[in-house]
Length: 186
Image (cartoon, rainbow, N blue to C red; front, top):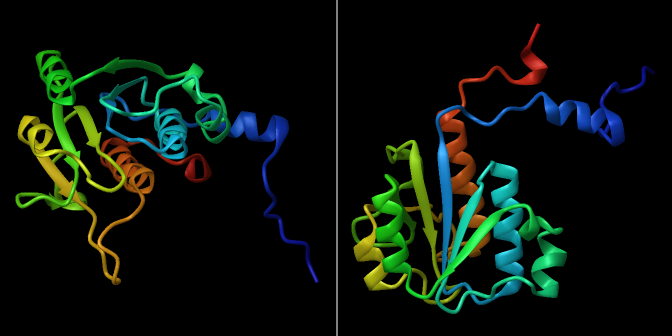
């Protein structure tokens, strides 16, 4: 019997592997969290932002903000690595992002939402997610340039907000990534 060459990367080997992965060129993605109350979801959003190469987040309304012990624990300190701002009103924050050239896209079950994997994402993108129970407000949806949804094939109507954010963010990354994966390089 031969030994399986597959093994989990740790330490130096992991760091070397991670250095070979570059973010997609030309993509500038921002996360906007509207009224996200659960610090576990906020911490997860910071961790997803770091993993996806997002350098800026905007926390709005009643979103739980750092410093908070659960944000720190779940986010593994990523709230210290990702630049974030607080804005009281999400729609006003989106106006400011639009003035900087971003298109704002809500991850929300909305009447005009397009399936997340069929949407034409811009290179300057602000992904907007909302409250765990109520989603993105009507006013904030009205300030967005579009909305995307994840199709649900079971009985549930939606996924956890940070899970949805991660799925859409990584889908956007895959759309902009033209790099050959490290394991396929010669």
